[in-house]
Amino acid sequence: MPTTPAAPDGVGTLIPVHEHLERVLTTVTPVARVERVPLSDAAGRTLATSVDALVDLPSFDNSAMDGYAVRRADVATAGSDAPVVLDVVADLPAGPARDVSIGAGQAAHIMTGAPIPPGADAVVPVELTDAAATRVAIRRAPRPGHHIRLRGEDLRTGDRVLTAGMALGARRIAAAAAAGHAELPVTALPRVAVVATGSELVEPGRPLGRGMIHDSNSLLLAALVAEAGCVVSERLRLADDPAALRDWLDRRGACDLVVFAGGVSVGAHDVVRQVLGELGTVRFATVAMQPGKPQAFGTLSDGTPVFGLPGNPVSVAVSFEAFVRPALLRLQGRAEVMRPTWRAVAEVGWRSPGGKRQYMPIVVGQGADGPTVRPATAGGSGSHLVGGLAAADGFAVVPEEMEHVAEGDTVEVAVTR
Image: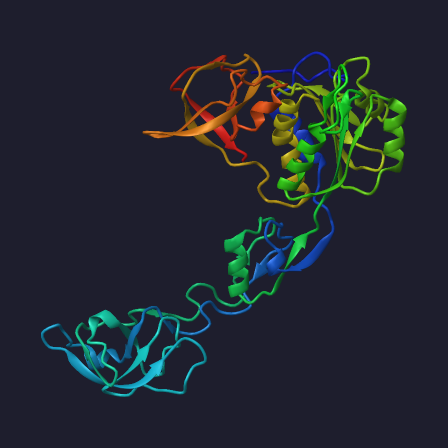
């Protein structure tokens, strides 16, 4: 839906989600700190610079099967009715290679992964022989090079193994190990300060007075920051007191990004808007999304990126997914910052606000023809329904032009669990 830019104070025309996200991603740059970590500590980290193979993979010709290493010329006529019998001159397990050569009329009993002995040019699987220990009967002629893994057929020394910006998971770490690396260069973990604002917030578990609620936002944000691969440098609650917020900004510890929850709308006690608005570097926007319409983003006086998210818990979770998580991945230098999405069929219908992108917390199921989704709570995408977040597997992302999702419609889904 075409829109015009929001007014400077963020009140008025809605801006599209992609416009706010673009501003975030053009502002946030990867942290410059790089460290080398052993492979055992690399899981979940982001590769800072590309790495190449230090050895050939495989590093030597080796057997792909348990069987017998042979000279193909010796067994070219072998068949089940006319086996060729060879002398077994060695037993070759995987491990340090023995100094054994295969001559005419000879074979070596060989295990998977063992080096191919000089003279041999094929491997016959044990099930195509009589498995004898001293004189083996070969019952089928192998093709040239059959069941031999050739040196360098996977990677050659100097070939690219991993590319900068990759998230390091199990398979990539294994590839680095096989290619000769003991450690990898990774981006230092970004440090994120999490601040929940609101005079109504009390520590979870404490008795609630009239008008008070337990603080779930700071814990929600801290957990989401950790799930995104960053370190929470500080987690705190602040009352709706501009002086207290200014004081914290002046004395806060070193961090790479700050996230506020609450206080970004137009209320008289929205202190984040009051205080950050004084800086002149933070934009308060009305974003065409539901939930999560009021958003703030910019930089603090020292250039640190800062987010201001609406205070209702579902809005916090949605805003983090839409804007903060991509920024945190950008801080880590990730090549891909958006979560993959896929399509699923709606089990039931629900309403969606026209002109806004809806993020509906959903539960994923499995139908006869593929995955299905339904709203996680009867209340739908209400921004206050924090209890429903526990049941949600992720979000259905409903485009701005849709005002109703009907049963059987296909919707875009981002799984976050």
